[in-house]
Structures are given as C-alpha cells and as structure tokens.
Length: 626
View 1 (tube, one colour):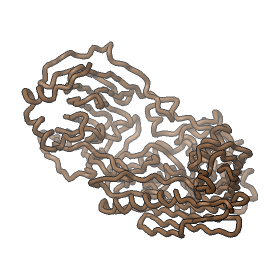
View 2: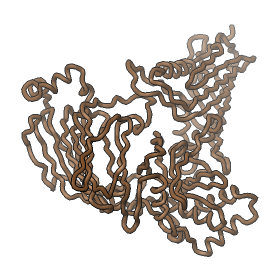
View 3: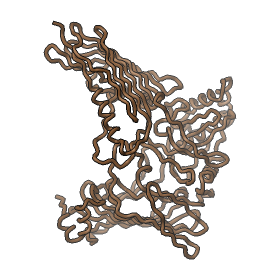
View 4: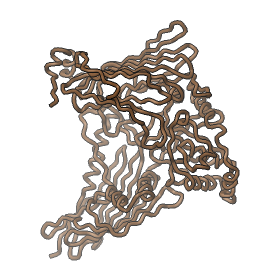
C-alpha cells in the first residue's frame, strides 16, 4: 500500500515547500515538481554537445513524470544515462541498472522507416513524495544540429517548475539567435576566450490549468526557440539567420531530385494534352499521383528533410510527404508548370504563428504549392480533391522553398460557407412514439473530411457509427445508406433511412416529441471561476437543418416552442418551428465564426453554447383528438 507522508516529511525536511502548498503557491494542483538544467556547447558547425539534468519530485500517484524517457538516434547519439531514485531529502534509495532500462524503436504512428530509438524506465516508490533524478549526455549532428534543442519549460501540464535553466556556449564564429515565446526574459551573457555563454533561468512557475477553447500550446505556454546562424548537415552548409537562408538550404536538399523517366514525363504530357488551362492540368496530374502512389513515411538521417528522387518514387510507387510532393513537382515540371515545395506544421489543434524576423525549425510535414493557379496540394492523401487542404494544414504559416530561398506564406482559411452541413429530413411519427426517418445531408469543407475517410476506407458499421456520432440518436435501425462524393470537390452527400423504435415519449393522450435530434450536438464548455487564456474558436462552420415531422393520425399540435434567435461574437443561431396541418417543419441554422476573444468574454462564450443546447432540446407536445 502506498503511503503519503506530506505531514511528516514536509514538516521535517521541507518546511518551505509545505508552506507554499498551504499558502496557495505555485505548487497548487501540481502532480510533480520539476528542476531542469539544459546545457549546450557548440564548437563547430557540424555537431554540438547536449546535457540534460532533471530532478523530479513525485507528489502523488497521478504523476506521469515517474517515467524517464530519453530519445536518441544516429544524429543524437546517447553518450551516457544516469538514473537514480532518491528520498525527498536527497538520500539515494538506489541507482537504476542498465538492464532495467528498456530500449526500443520509436517508430511514429505515421512512419514505417525511422532510426529514432527510446530509452525508458518507470520508477515507483511506496512513499510519497519521492525524487527521480536523471542526467544524460548526447552528441548531436545532422539535422538535429540544424534545429538546436528548444527550451521547453513544461514537460507536463501538471508540472510545477521550481527552476529551469538553459545554458548555451558557442564560439564567436558560430553565432546563435533566440526568441522567447510567451515569456519576458533576457539572458545573462558572458564573453571569454573567443566564446559566448548565454544563461536563462525561470523559477516558481505553477502548473498549467487546461481551459476549454484555449490557444494552441505553443501560443500559450512559455518556451524559447534557439536557432544557429550556421550549421552543416553532411555535405550541405546552411543557416537559420533568416527564412530566406533556411529556405536556400532546403532548396539544396531538393535540387536535382525531380528528374522523371522519359516515359513517365511523356505520359504526363499526354494526360494533360488538350486540357483547357493549368488548373485542369494540375488536377489531372494530382489524380494520377493519387492513383499511382501510396504514402509511406521514411525518417532516416537526412532523409527526414531530403526527399527520395522522383525516379525512385516512379519505380517503387511509394514515398513520404517530401517524396510524394517532389514527385508531384516533377510531374508538373514535365508539363512546364512551376511549383514549390512547402514545409508546414500539420496539427489539427493549431500551429505556431511564425515571426517574420526569426527563423526556426517548426515543421513536421511537406506539401506543394502551384503559384500560377494559387493551388495547394496535399500529396499524401488519396481521397482529397485537387487543391483541398485538411483541417490540419489549413490556415497555417508555412515556408515556401524557392530557387531564391525561403519565403513565408499562409495557407487558406475556409469560411463558414465552405465548411457547411445542409440537412434535409422527414420524420413520420407513430402513435406509440416510434418514427420512420429519411435523411439527406450535404457536407462540404472540413465537415466533409470524416465522411470522405469513412466512405473510402470504412466498412458498413463504420458508416453507421459516423451517423450516430453526427446526431443525438443512439437507437437507429438502419435501412438503405448511400454515400455519394462529388467528383473534384470537397463535398459528399449522405442519405439514409432508419427506424426509431422510441423517438417520442408517450404520457396518456399526449406525445412529447423532440424536435431536433439530427443536428450535431454542440458541447457546452465547463464553467470556470477564473479564466486565464483568450477564447479561441479556430474554425468557421455552418449547419442548416430542415426537418419535416409528419404527425400520427388522430393527433394535433398542443404546443410548439416559439421562434428563437441568438447573436454573439462567436456566431448566430436561429430556430423556427411552424405547423401546417398534419406537418410540423423545423428550421435550424447555426453559424460559428472563426475568432479569438479576450478571456473576459469566456462566460459569454459558454452561455452562447449553453443556450444552444437548451434550445436544441426543445420539444413539441401532441395530443390525441377527443
């Protein structure tokens, strides 16, 4: 049985720590206390020495920081690793032996070929709090030398940061650039014998309290990026002194790798012969790419940044995001259409706004841009139409890799008209509360994506699950279901029939009928006593539903909800219910805006969705005729 000895240990060993907990200090809500020291030493353009010492005070069994995880690779060689379990007073309980530490491949969920590996050990103790103390050293070369280790202050949201120190020493011939984000800090700088040492320190930072609709992690939490003025990766010289310089380095890695076999180049010309314009040619070659290749991620050494040659992809018919983008670039080149590789941070949760005056390595994906048609191409997806970017790559700062070097750009943000659901349904009620349902929904933009995936890859049960998730209906006995994608557009029509055994509730002569169980339910954000971060609604979308409810024979309408309208900085909502003989028609419109509002408006945000939830639960009452 695990024992927590806060009262005894803190009273005898750590009076200041206990006082902080009781006084409501930076420790409140923490599962662990972190003390970090990151040390970097740069002596040449091709490699650096990196050391990380972490001391973690584990406060309770909820802490995940008892797991020691160290990543390494041929470009980040692990020189040594020392792990110890200590008491709160610093007395060593034991030193972890090498044979206790797991060592396994770190292949990502999206990758098949990688050379990254992980050392891992979990340290538990019967008495809380206890301390996990570990140090490791690495020699970093290759692409790791290009992107210097960032100062990531928070390892976990539940961590209280007692102290974090980042120290970097470099020669005067190899300057560095740094940029704190969400952090007001300046370094202590010392010059000595042709070297410069920078030292940053933060102390007593509380755990992060996650909030609904908060900004993306890198836009909210304190951290610092560090970029080298000059670096070398294998035989390639590069610099992160500017975006232009970094793009020029990447262009070196891509240059000369876009040559196709003549037969394939001739086929590309044949496919596009007679097409009316460059947009049609781009779409035709994009379909050819989708039909001929498949996505396989490869992250080996410089291959993490350099694509396979187009001839390799042509022969083997697979590649990662870089290789497939390069192959599409080669196909376009064969028909004299210019295109640029694009590097981007792909993530559905958001991305970092890239500062124009500070270049950093903040990318995990590659796509392609065609300037003549202003077309962005996601070359890894075999279900998307030409020019459509998914939620993970829309509205992102990106770097174009051009012959003149790097240039910042921004991918399109889709509007509420483009991210749209339009639903039409008829619902025939029976006197026992059952109903027969016929639905046709048209989905475009981001609202099309999940349907497109389930249509292309899913089984029948996956489609049914998707329908259930898109409605508030759990008990559906399905009839015919059809999914009809619109060619060359991010649009799909979903039509289905279903029986609802228990739709309305019967009480004596009355039926209590939910009016709208088909529109997707908007979650209501939790109530907060205090809000720290701005309120972010990243994507605009619109939902329009028209539902006709046929009354059972012998029933009439006793009551209907009144018309309702909501107006907010976050969107608009309109609900109208009208009776016409034996039919009741509900029209519901919801439009959500892409916006960021001050933290003080969080209650307005919550109340908007709370009211939508209340109105979506509206019922009509039917009564049997005398």
